[in-house]
Length: 291
Ligand SMILES: Cc1ncc(COP(=O)(O)O)c(C=O)c1O
Image (tube, rainbow, N blue to C red; front, side, top):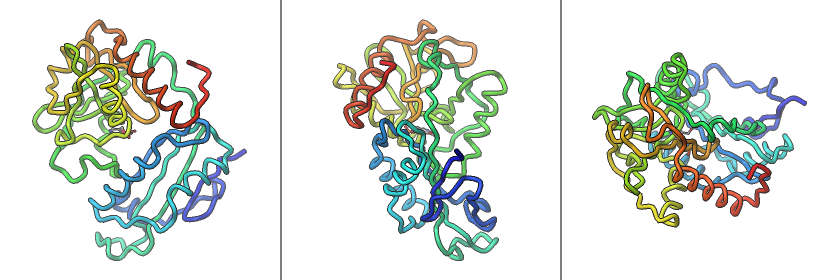
């Protein structure tokens, strides 16, 4: 059966979904999105995703659609009969005149898709990921930092550079040369019993998974330090891992040609991943057969 999508209040087959070429999301990248994960039919931390979306919309002056976003997400999951899924909600300023004047936009566009959550390959957790530090930089003072916008070219370029050389992720530095974030993830570093992660002033997205890990870490006896993280601190870490809503926590075992710690997924990463999955199961009622 063809996937069904939600577009501006209607559920329809993906092949019939159309938006105007005058949409400001297309013309100017004036849009925002959220990627979320559903477990057993429930989206983990949906409220937090929608709060981040609302904060970002306010920050960039993008009007939110009137539709109930939560209901649009669940309608899409239910229409596709999906329990475990990757859900993407996209909003844009909608159709306007092809001159850069958002005041000409009439109605925001709201688009939701859901795809079966094909399990992330186990090798991601067993062997870990390797990342490249691309040449481009994140500007921590840019209004596009900390916002998950459809203006995603910086991250795409970083991914393309990493993937061309056979790496799974790109670790993007900011203008000060400190770690900002991955192209689709936040970064955590374990050093001498402390868990470090770049603070939001470093330019990273306030990841929902990042904040869940920050919340969980003290229960495992870990002190979390949010602040500037120098590239050298990452390279000399005992362990490191990446977070996002789909990957959950993925060990980062190498950067460029350098191994992080033992070059194998570390014990604290495993413990935190287990605690994260237990929390997910508690909040979503998920029954996972791979635990
Ligand atoms: C640039 C960037 N940073 C961080 C993240 C992690 O965010 P979350 O944990 O909310 O999925 C993402 C998610 O895709 C991202 O695109």
